[in-house]
Each structure stands twice: as C-alpha cells, then as structure tokens.
Image (cartoon, rainbow, N blue to C red; front, side):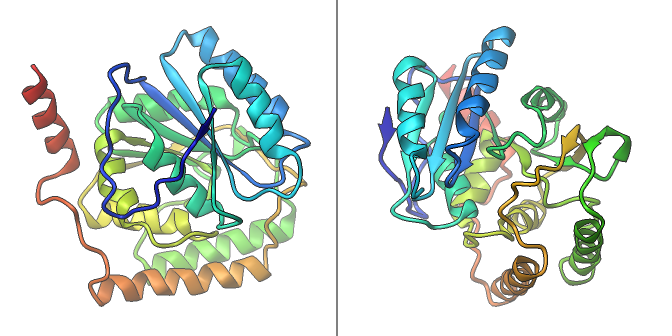
Length: 277
C-alpha cells in the first residue's frame, strides 16, 4: 500500500476510526540489502506484543529496489504502509513525512538498520506513558548497553558535536543523534509541522522545538550497536550538521518558528479526549 505525501506545515493530524495505539516510522534510502530483514523483525515483534500498530516505511527516492521490497511486504502485511518522497529529500524530511501521515497515539521513528533493537521501543513508550512528551534513546547514558561500539574517530566526533550543542543550543543531553525517538501524538502535532531541517541535524531541531515549547523530554538509555554500513561521513556530514544547527538557532532568534497552539500539547490532548466522551 502506498500513501500520498503530505508536506504542508498547516497539515492537521486526522485520526481514522480505527486509530492504532502505536506508529513505527522507518526512513529508508537505498536499503534493499537490509529493509526486508528489518521489516520481518519489526512485524514479528509487534505481533508478539499483540500491539495495535502500524508501520510506515518512508522511501526517500531510493535508486535501488527498496520501494519494490517494501511494496511486497506491504501487500502481505496490512500493518505496513509505503510512503514515497518526491525524490531524495533527506532523513529528516522522511521522518517528518512519516509522522505527518501517522495515525497512532504514540509515534516512534527508528533507523532502517535497527541499530537499537525494536524491543527497546517499550522503554520509550513507558517513558511517554509515565508523563514524558518526548522520549529519546541514548547510547551514552549507559555505555554498557552498547553491543557494538563505534570506531574511535566516530566517538571523538560525536562527543565534540555534543559539546558544541551544549554551547550553542543549551541542550544538556548526552545523546541527541540516536535514531530512536518517540513522541506522544500531542507532542508530534506541536513539533513536526514546525520542522525545517531535512537532513542530519533534524534530531537537534526536534529536541530544540520540544524544549522551546515547554515539553518534557526524557533521555532513555537503550541497547545499541554500530553498523559499519552507516551512510554518514563523520567529518563532512558533521560540518553540515553544525551549519544546520546554527540555522536552527538563527531561525529561533528571528521568529521563524511559530507555535500552532497556545496551550500545551498534553493539555490539548486531554481536552480532545474530554470532547470525545
């Protein structure tokens, strides 16, 4: 099943009558070698947990057979939906596109390589159910959970970038870049229509927007393993990320971000539940 793109900052989240509890968003670009096994593991886990869930796989203009593989899985598994971007737009764009099409009460995005096993989603969802608006997976709060460490150079770049974020953005988190983050529906409604960064630094922008709107962000240690097939070049893309971070700070200073509601997302969600009764 393929879903049309909705890339509009004014797009409102419309719920279907059969709203799933969980939405799992997986951005994918040229992932033909591993997307099949990833979908098998995710589907198997969701069914074991007996969760009411949907899986939205967002193809970012892949040049290989990634969309065909996703399409075959979607035809055999009704919980899977294929969303296709208009060309290669970046991981941040893909995550945003998936979030804007998602129907769940709790929404999570994960990397296509499942560097954090899908079973770790329970930790993030538990944090949301416990009162957090956003739960971000962390590789660095408990390094004993890393079952495959990054190469030394990548670790050095990662720590340097983290110090840069603390100085420029005031984000006092140990890990902003782990590709494993979850949102309540109300938080997603508040954050993703405002997102502007489409590539590597989008994680930073999401956390910055959450904090800017007074949302509670919980950093949760998760199991994680480095994949040598990572498409990110630590130096080249690190410089680009730094430039994008500076843009986010500039956009904030110049009023480019406009909140789409005057009440907190958690309270707005509560009000919506009251009206439905």
